[in-house]
Image (cartoon, rainbow, N blue to C red; front, side, top):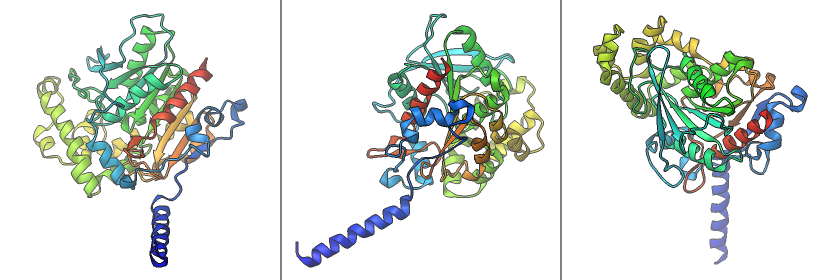
Length: 396
């Protein structure tokens, strides 16, 4: 190589390095939590720093995004379009249990690797709660279920709580799932606690499912049936998230609303007779004309719960105010470039003040993306497994 070629190579390398630094910035995890000395050294920060290297070790606590998935939109799109793919990290089979709710509704529980028939079992249970339009069949949920069952020291058994009408769950009452009402979460946990009274439980929620878990943990406080909980891409300010998703754009118009609204319409149309028999009074013609989630929530959820508009419902559903009341180990993982749950909605001050909680904030990740490496792999699998192990050990 002559001098000119060497100079060009060096210049190109410097340019690539500068571009990478500009695009990626700081890839380290930023932990927002009360001091480790809180609660006599038993704070969540102390727990994370001692047992969760993926979140606290300077050499490991970072997410360098997949080179062709830089940016929150690309991470989110990749997650959404690959929701049903299968590979060796996600190829699992569930065992289903149908669970009747107190109002006649039905929630389906998908168990992996299968149900435990022994009521005296002390094997921990991880309860996964999907987001809006999601179910046990999504890639990130299958991948986490497999990872928790295989890679935790505690050897947890996983159960995914599919919302009413989702994940091929029949709709048997007029009440649909939403971001506000935590009764189904409480009923599922109560059922599991009665069935396996000696088995400790932890919860993991995604997006809207994370919002429900946050509200449940804050409302239950010391009475929570979960020993700990982790939430991924939780929209702590649901109104802020709703307005972000309602803005016209490629992500909201072509991807999010197209998939989620179509999914909700299918549930409503498929169960039209059930809803009509229950006297729901829903305007199906207006529902079928809806193109945005805010319209569906105005026509269905707000009406069901007596809110004047979807925005009033979103404000009431926000889980941020409940963070201060949480009294069990609680971890939130959010990306600062999340286009659906903006970072401005994360109640950082509440996390910094409550020693029972911690928020792991990352520059990259999008909404339930968090893809790193080649080929892309989900980064949060190991941090969640480490936190689950640490929390279960602490609860003994």
